[in-house]
Amino acid sequence: MQEKLTEEQRTQKQRELVEAMGRLTNQGGGTSLAGRILGLLSFLDKEEFTFEEIVDELKISKSSISTTINHLMETDKIEYVTYPGDRKRYFRIKINTRKQFLLAMKRHIEKLEKLNRTALELKLDKNSRTAKNIGEILKGFAFWKNQIESYEKEFLADEI
Amino acid sequence: MQEKLTEEQRTQKQRELVEAMGRLTNQGGGTSLAGRILGLLSFLDKEEFTFEEIVDELKISKSSISTTINHLMETDKIEYVTYPGDRKRYFRIKINTRKQFLLAMKRHIEKLEKLNRTALELKLDKNSRTAKNIGEILKGFAFWKNQIESYEKEFLADEI
DNA sequence: TAATTAGTTCGGATTTTTTAGAACTAAAGA
DNA sequence: TCTTTAGTTCTAAAAAATCCGAACTAATTA
Image (cartoon, rainbow over all chains, first blue to last red; front, top):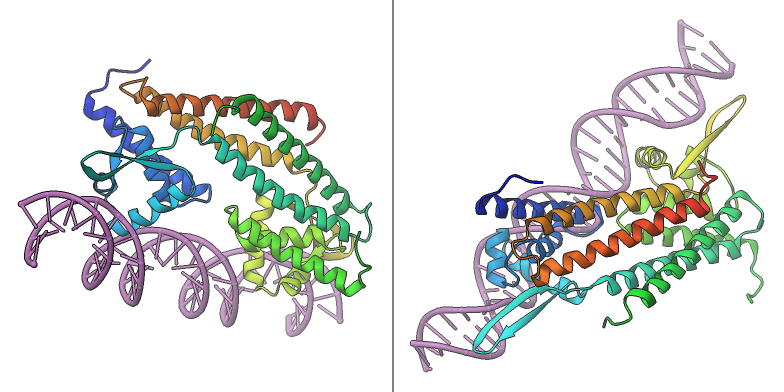
């Protein structure tokens, strides 16, 4: 399928994926640094990175890395492990963050749903074009909430 | 369910929803002005707004409105209608933009999928924690792509 | 106790995004 | 033809997000 790559070419490509992840995350609303950290922790062969290693790999200041890492931990995207007799924290991506992802998606849908439901209540003419459209949108939200819930039951029953 | 609202209170609340839509759109990656325009065109009782009316309602410069309106039309969120003997364009939200929305979502998933698939191919140890996690993520993407496709078939067959 | 390590926090600098204002265009009307 | 209308486009300003360096802290090591 592919030409044989040298070790260097392979890690070079992995680093390119890290940058691509940064750009994609950026498009999707997140910060590109967050995306690059997530990419680093998942696409390279090394499974765990210390703070310093992240700084060195991404060539970004300690302060920016510190802020972003803390944010990624708050939002449960990454975590760290420690080893006895070693003061450093070893960061790694959290596996199976789908549950958190779906939860966030559901919460976003719920906010939009609330907004649209209120808008519909406030409409003078419930048969107007916009009112009927809001009704359709609400149906769509209900469908997706349902899908998310059944997905959770089917696939994620055993997750934390 | 609710106290009876005066006409003013009702439209006041509608305007608040427009602002809330701006903030929510902003959180979700879009610009808040785009959200406010979408809110204006869907939550008020008036079904169609001219360029000037949007400027007056939102109290934003013509240039900003012009740019944002054009972007919303390119992305098929709004459209305009015209009336004989009237030079103005009457903007309104496009109904049932779910298809476009899902298409955008599918495209985003496909990009992430490609990235992760490549990352997995490049992994030295396919049984590592990160490699297995990527595998799980890919399974999740496959599931959602499938859901989206069947949703399209089931509900959106008649849409443009 | 002093020095080093492993970060965090703060204020400012840089970059990017958003908005405004003025000049412009193309069509319609007088 | 001159003016008005309905916007568009360009450049600069304002605001917001991002990033950095320097000073700091708390724990560990010498």
